[in-house]
Length: 271
Image (cartoon, rainbow, N blue to C red; front, side, top):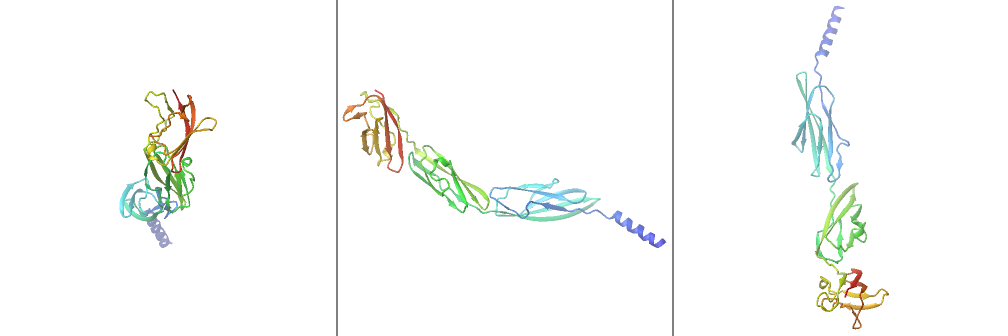
């Protein structure tokens, strides 16, 4: 009986004096994850024991961060990233280490809205999307003819940036293209053919950039008063019909620029 009790005491002492070990377990939902381009991820490390713990984070073998919170936010910039966590736990004067690794992959998705373009006002512009995608949308959608197709046409009246938004592999990716208007095409809406030598004809600045244009001017009843191919400064309308002055008032024009673009509006004669 004395021997049995002695061994029981020894066993109890060994259990009491045995140091408590601790280890870190990195948690990532999901682990070995694949992200969309531009998407970040937050890692959370937990320690399953007691003691003072320091977490050291490494990305592709390079030291990134050391903290006690066990939280590490990361924005990948390469197709594949190896994340390693080293935990240092000090308890009862004993330092224990543990290492956990996980991999982050980034979808390699690329779409291209095409190069920026520089055009005159009124020019019909074609935009072309390229790349791998499941679906796409151009915005502003009201400025293009078929916003869900890769090839669209638009006639911006001012410098405009278009956004191409595409879905691929469950990711939403973007690209942008800007159409710069280099010659703003502004059609005056009044002129004063009174013979004073100023503004006597309806001059349209920039019309010379569209030599294949056609101008038709009508009254409010739809009667054609003027019809000319190649409207320019030299043959600008002087407010005449059959050689006679037309009265003051509002008239209607239809201008075909010769590139598929048609402009409609009103012109007022003020004498």
